[in-house]
Image (cartoon, rainbow, N blue to C red; front, side, top):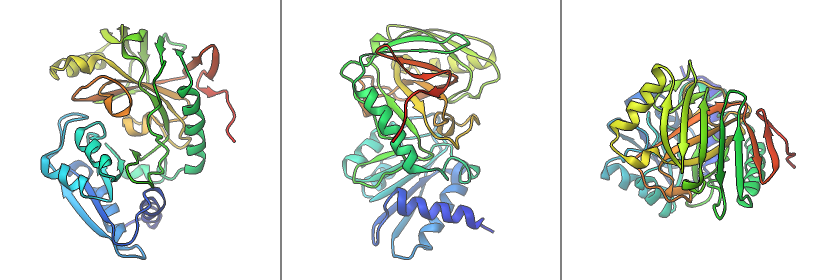
Length: 326
């Protein structure tokens, strides 16, 4: 039996977060590992107080984040009004997603989502998230330089000059062409790729690796990974990147700041990177949110207790935001 609390949240997401309206085409793209969540949304569409046209698209699981779906799946996405991407590996950073949003589809990407997220980060105060994302994005939009440090050794410098924040990833994808994640809640930007230098020490999670049990040290020079150090999990990440045979997968793509108070560190990036008090650095694809690096993948590294300094002003100190939100 479906938990009525979860069914209510699913319906609220369709109506409030996605602005689904009568007679619109709802396309739910999924694969076998995430079928349970996809079926929840598909079934909830039939319990709405108005008529919609839901279509469930089951595809072969992708092998990594950012791998393109098939042409048939892409066409279904482009012909939707609202599209939910409920897949094991995210297809956010793909040409298929970009083409669909260019056609006006409203898209929520939910890579690696699980049922327990409904009563956690999906059941969030989206008004508050929107205000927080908007305020931080304003600061990033006007920024020139950024430094990020952590108590365990992260020290990265980067330029944000003439770069604009992506998103907003606030969970409210109500207008044509709007897209983002659910769970939602991050402000993010593509830094000037070649400007990024320093050391990133990751102690939260890494996409395609999972929850970290040991720190992973990533050295970066001129925007590109030069060395990955650590134990077994560092080796997994290093080998994954090498096997992609894509030099641009090693390029810094993103700096993101989580603002969702209900998010946890679970090993699933879509929730981890949204957790309030964390930041993340992504590698790979970023042309879809203002960067210049074209890659076949996008992989985030989430770390705890960041201090973020922007043009000499402290935005976050040891994981605590130092600004007020109206």
